[in-house]
Image (cartoon, rainbow, N blue to C red; front, side, top):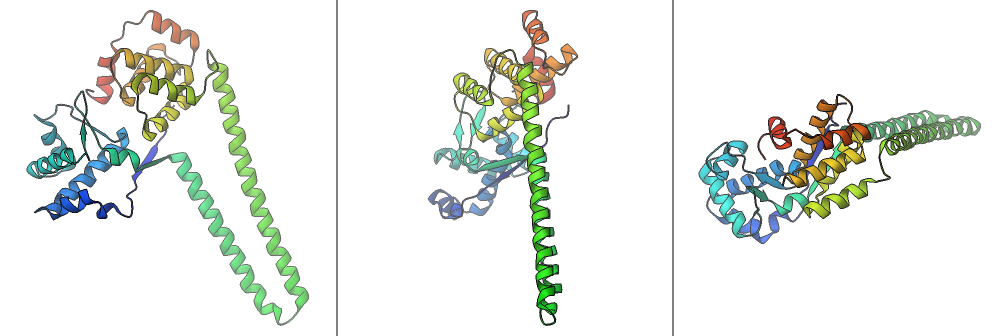
Length: 290
């Protein structure tokens, strides 16, 4: 099963450039360049819940970041120093850096949700165009016969009702499909659980949970099932890894080992019992070093 595609975007508050920290940064010589570097850092971090990582491809975090965002290393160094001093960038453990503004202003949606949203917008536009066209045909007829006007108006109302019925049917199909998927997933689980249980497990093991991590957990649950995702989160904790990408690497490697879709409770239990796999090494092959 292919990994669900997801789109991300960064939402800036209308007063972003009115904040004192941004005003002071822009007033420094070359401040506009530093501001652009900060925005690039925000965009680069949204797929990891507001975090940037030093993977060791360059000698320092600054040189690696400059290479990643295609900016001059000296300008990146000045920007990073300013952000650290003013609390806009926080240095964490294990070569991690956290941008609070990115986590608070990130949005995302799956490709399926994007297609449905565009379909609904297109349907609304089509409805408006049809109604407008019908009205333009009806107006000249008002001068000839009031009965013709009533007939045309009735046709317009029928068109509206037809569109409403189509939308209701589509929504009903979506709800029915979702319910059936959940019933299948619950039947495959070893114990009754919900997505909220997985969120709570993550919080209990790693603390803070971002909107990005929630969305990624939802995607992994849809693909691998609740029980397998919960086990993968626990394995990540045992290995001292708090990145969602590491959890996904565990699930993918379990699938390769078992030769199944990873949703069998008995296979899962057997794998944990006779575990001989170095998950850290396997995840590194797919995602790079943590």
